[in-house]
Length: 316
Image 1 (cartoon, helix red, strand yellow):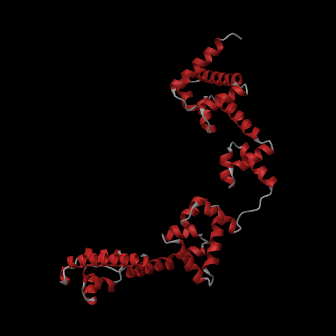
Image 2 (image 1 turned 30 degrees about the vertical axis):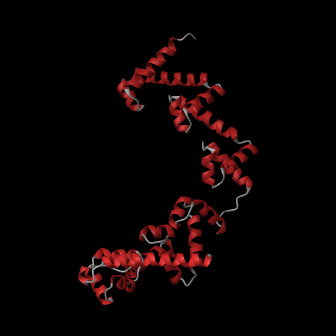
Image 3 (image 1 turned 180 degrees about the vertical axis):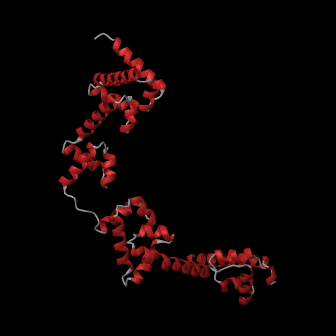
């Protein structure tokens, strides 16, 4: 029963295919002059060889070549040959100069617009080294020059997580001792960087950064930096919204921080001193001059003067 079914199925499929082919051929005129450019191009796009196209269109091979010449149609193989010749010309004229300047694979690909595999093959042939050995060295150079994962992934046509694995396989990762990592994290936290930013910079997991922060009690460094920045910027007259923007946190978070660390009174005092300094300068110069010197608008200067006056009227 199974044998009969398979035989029937194959016979039916063959019959359908033959019927479709015959109906397509029936639509094609036997006169060579009636063959259209679209018909030939459609066959080429389907991956058919010139001989197969001639048989399919029921014309002689030399007649098909003549028609292709008239229509200026190239076969896939001919197009590939021309593209390869063009690529080789670009590589031969460009790469020797770039290699002399120690250009890397990324720079070569950008300059030539040619796929990295062809570039590596060209270099491998002229240095008498294998493709694998040449590729290994050129990728090591890219990692050492600190190209990011996204750039290398785009160049190689692979995903970013594959780039990270490749980096390990190539042995490019520098073995950094734990105490050195902690010191680097400490410096970055003290400069105002957040754990996520540090993780990206050091190519580490965010959870690992938090683990180091907890183990070595580094979390307070973020608070210290934020407190220092808030007080310094308040001394310059900046609002909490402006300070929050600089610290890359939202306005509500910075308000909670101020309350938690009891900074409100100190901030008010610093702002009053700033406003009084403006009032003092306006006494000795015009409002327009002070506004220009401090890069503030007239309205801002007037607002600061009013605040200075209000604070002076408060009971001591």
